[in-house]
Image (cartoon, rainbow, N blue to C red; front, side, top):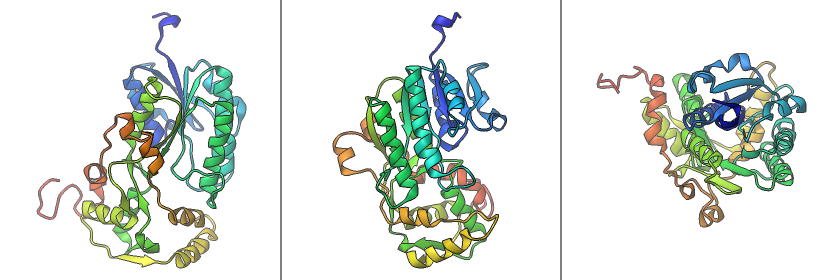
Length: 325
């Protein structure tokens, strides 16, 4: 095969993360060459078997360093930015990663003459009181100034085998006498299965999606309480759910954040996010800027959770009746 007729090259920033690894697999299945751009290529080798020999390559890149980003997009026809952080640590600050980093990727993509898919989040708003959501919003604004034809995808909470939501609370259920319902657990989510989000990215790279901002959620809207109830059902545990006010949760988060070398289970910024519902807007539904509008039938939480939370059950894969689950 000559260089001229090689499959198109797609660079995936954050290609070893929760969303990125599934995007890499989907793109490889669709026949693209994939360059996985990550800070630690030595820890990302597990993505190589997702494609044929030589189809997937690794590249060192850090969104805080422009030269590494420029090198990573060299020769690419499409760029997918999956990089994001839920909490700040060290030099990985929200602005550095989700504002400056997003702008850097957009500028490098434009200079390379490539197209861009950017993974953002529902609730992204430069005027948000949440530092996380505000940085996401500024990142989107920076991208659209450089690449008005970019495709921005805003998922609700993303779940899947490596998620930091259901896995975290299932692990807590193993040892905690109860699980906390922040603010009564009434915050609404529209969880999207990571594989469904990856398929949406695949469609975008295929050229089946026009430029714009898409809000992607799964087939059901669940409150925080309902999410925990479904998780407990799947893991066959009966931990009580105890309502905790936002004020008390804020105090606990503040104390936990002040303890050196400890990663707090929840930050005050995340509490700010929990005060607003995280669901697809009416405007996005009306305009077809949704998962269903893209022709993808999302999979529900109840259908997927048993496939990866089974090891949190008291008897592992065996139910209380002793039969394999």
